Length: 210
Image 1: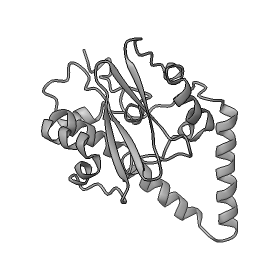
Image 2: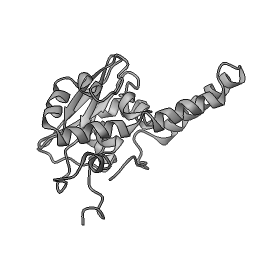
Image 3: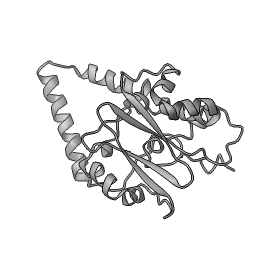
Image 4: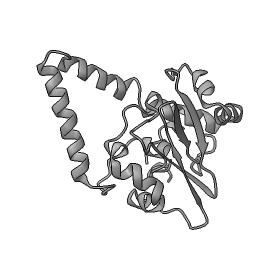
């Protein structure tokens, strides 16, 4: 797995997600029509989140943690301070990093709205903002993970972390086996947005692992 990927699974009903997208487009159209914003301004904001602020920043943090034990210790102790070492602005939001390890898998959600570590992951996926994901991730996390193609063993504890307006969570995925000696840049390519939310894992693409 490398980079972001689309899910065709139903994480709470495509109807609901389509309704959210339609509402956003309607609001955007109304603001443009009233002259409060311009289409170019919206495009520039989206471009910035997709190219300057996005999962590539989170992947950079994860790869450094995999290769630098001292940085990893600082990251787990104080995520905000650690990522600021890399020149990443948190906009005064507190970041807590939770580590996946044998026997423990972490999943991030925001049950109240859609609080998200946008300064590391960019724009949140539509499904993350849906009411279905926000409620089901807490009530039945294993079922939600199964819909993403993940089935943790019964002896693996699934921990769910609820973000808030002031506190954001980032999952530090397990480093894939067989990547010993890899540099940070190459490792970062293995880290997907979903693996940093907990609905995916970092993995070596089959062809690259041969």
